[in-house]
Length: 220
Image 1 (cartoon, rainbow, N blue to C red):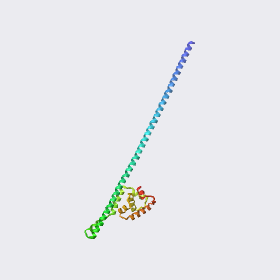
Image 2: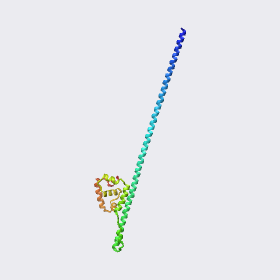
Image 3: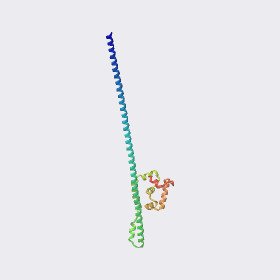
Image 4: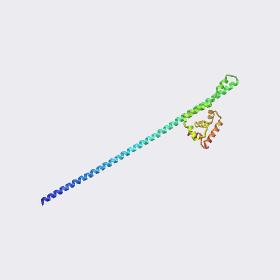
């Protein structure tokens, strides 16, 4: 009986050891699984953080590039406007010089006319050669104006198709801030004629009394 009891005890001890071993193994497996889950969670969180950082970096980079593009575009537009304004000032100065030249020629012609009336026959051929060519002056001016203000006439035609070529010429001169007196001297007509043309131009463009013609044309 004692032998049987010892054997039974041994069997139970072995059984308990086996159960303990299995329990420890299971516990280790659970621990390993927990650690694996922790590692996966940390890895997943790290991946999300890295992807979020990359997305934020790309967003900031694109935003900066877009802002730089807008700044460069604005600077280019401002530079272009400055160049156009500078060239228009040069054009205005050139036109004023043409006016002065024509006035000087007319003065010389008047002086020579007075001399020819008193005596000299040699003056008459000179008078015949002296001519103020307003048409050629305008063609030269218009060519330079169109080079600087490329879309001006097209924009006028689209907005006000009823305007004539004479109206376009007047609009170009008004855009450059020429006074009625300067316009009359440049194209060789009276000031009254210029003022009448301005009045008719305002009517064609349907401008109210409060609207400034120069400011409207400056937008084209």
